Amino acid sequence: MTGPGDIAYDVAHLLGGAMLLVGFVMLGQRRIGALIAALAAQGVLLALAAFWQGHVQAAPQLYLTGLIALLAKGIAIPLVLHRLAGELPPPLRTEAPGRMGAGLVLGVGLVGLAMLVVVPATTGAGALARVDLSMALSILLLGALMMVTRRSALAHVAGLLTIENGLILAAVGVAGMPLVVELSAGGLVLVVALIAGVFARQMRERFASLDPGVLDRHRGEGR
Image (cartoon, rainbow, N blue to C red; front, side, top):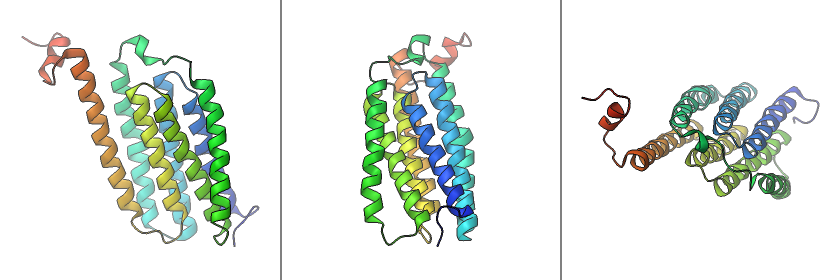
C-alpha cells in the first residue's frame, strides 16, 4: 500500500497540492489575464497528474486523458479566453477587490470541510486515492466559490473549468474508474459551448448583433 515516503504517493500529493495552490491563486487574482494564465497552469498540472496516475496504475487510457487535458486545458482553451479578454475594454479586464479577501478566507474553510468529509468517508481506500479525492473535492469547491464571488463572465468560465479539473483529478485518482476519457471529453464539449455562449453574449452587448460581419466593420474591413 502506498503512503508518505513512497514515490507514487509523494508525486501524486505534490501535483494535487500544486493544483490546489493554483486554485487559491485564481481565487485571489483580480486581473483576468493573470487568472487565465493560472488556469492554463492548472490544466498542465492536471495533465501531469493524469500521466502519473497512468504510470502508477498501468492504465494506458489515462495517458489519453492527460493528452486531452494538456492540449485543451493547458493550451487551446486559455488561448481562446485570452483572445476574448483582449477584446474587453481595459477597465473590464480587472475586477474590483471587494470580495477577494473574503473569498480566500471562505476558500480555506472549504478546503478544511473537504478534508473532514473525504478522510472519514474513505477509510477503507488506499492513501493515494484518499489524497487525490480530498484534493479534488477542495479544488471543485474552490471553483464553485469562484463562480459565486466573481462577476466577470470569463471568471465564471474559469470557475467552471476549475470544477471540471477537480472532477477529472478525482476520476484519474481512483484505480479502475470507468469512462474517465469520456468524462473528460464530455466536459470539454460543455466548456466549449459555454465559451461560445460568452462570446455571443459579448457580441450582443457591444454591437447589439450576433452577425459576425459587424466585427469586420468594427476593424474597418467592411465596405
